[in-house]
Image (cartoon, helix red, strand yellow):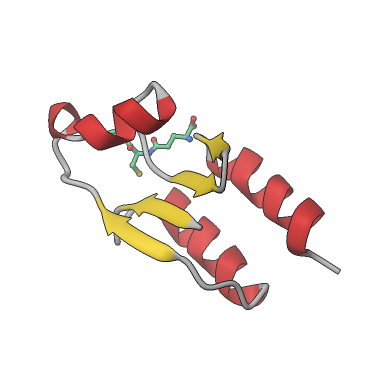
Length: 76
Ligand SMILES: N[C@@H](CCC(=O)N[C@@H](CS)C(=O)NCC(=O)O)C(=O)O
């Protein structure tokens, strides 16, 4: 699993806390603060905001979608 992340982004913090609480390991990719420098984020997700989570062939571009997905797939 890969998380496109900015350390101080509150939405990224929410996702990191969820990943940690579920005991999941993941690769954290720090993105540059300037939106136009996030080419990889755009290539992966079609937009520039973080967090973006990639799990095998699935891509999620919003913290709420990410958290629901993680709960559904890895929770309980
Ligand atoms: N997924 C959120 C947005 C997430 C978000 O705004 N992330 C910020 C970082 S905290 C971001 O990437 N903003 C674009 C930028 O920094 O230029 C939403 O759709 O409401």
